[in-house]
Length: 111
Image 1 (tube, rainbow, N blue to C red):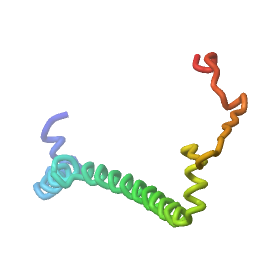
Image 2: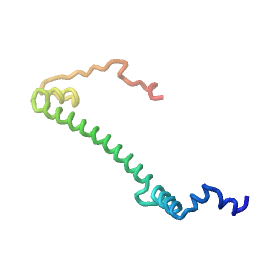
Image 3: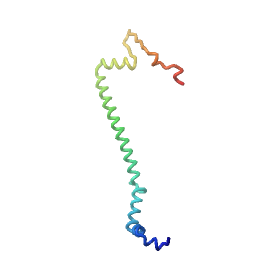
Image 4: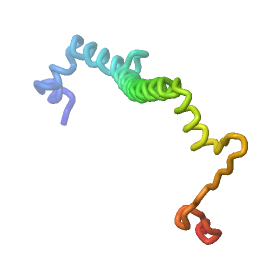
């Protein structure tokens, strides 16, 4: 196919128009090469979504911690928590910790 025949083609004349070429060049530059390109915006939007998810997680954790602190204002609750988690005891008191067989790890379980 000769170049003169290609120049007569309707699509070639449209694409070779200087305004269309400038527009195509501008679009390629904005999508791929610019500092505010589509790909950078997509990456930043993904980061924003991840941060919003972690924000909701931490807000729930703060709410749970505030409820726990409010619950620990009672001295009976503090004592109950200390006994259950840290095995604390009063003077002249014996504590027996009972473990069931299925909760004890055997040496064979590590394999």
